[in-house]
Image (cartoon, rainbow, N blue to C red; front, side):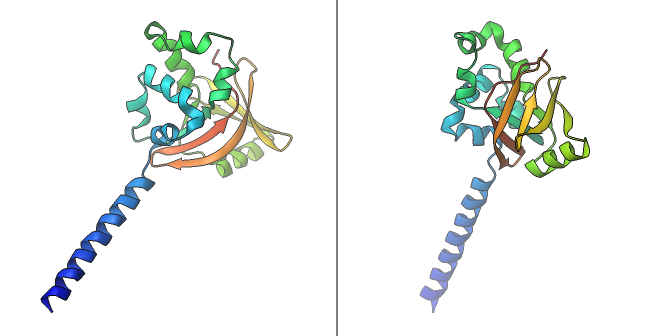
Amino acid sequence: MKKMKAKEIIMSFAMSFLAIVAMAQDKKDVVDIAISSENHTTLVAAVKAADLVATLKGEGPFTVFAPTNAAFAKLPEGTVDMLLKPENKKALAGILTYHVVAGNLDATKVLAAIKEGMGKVTLPTVAGGSLTASIEGGKVILTDEKGGKSTVTATDLKGSNGVIHVIDTVLMPK
């Protein structure tokens, strides 16, 4: 009888531990999600170089439009290396925070805002600028203040402090 009780207690603790581990895995923040993506290694390096890790691990919520490695590769040769230098930390932070909007805007909310805005919506970024979201050819397109365009290629990577939408081009502030 005592052996059975001990086994039940041990099993109960084991199940509780597994549940806690499972919940912890569901609690990845937007930085952890980017870190776990092989397509965002350049973005992660940039976030670290700009000293934005702690900020983006904060409470949020944040909506992050995350450029892929291929998006960064589209920039003129040497641009990424130049931006990653310590003396360019402020400029890099400005570019990166231009890709972040306060709030938790999943794809449904973005599409509803575009519809409500008669085909486009202006999204204020935490950098102080704005992005314009619209639909072209059935895809969500973001336009920066310089007229550059980026296509949203994946949506709703949900984290504990926000959501990530993957984009194919780096957006630039004024």
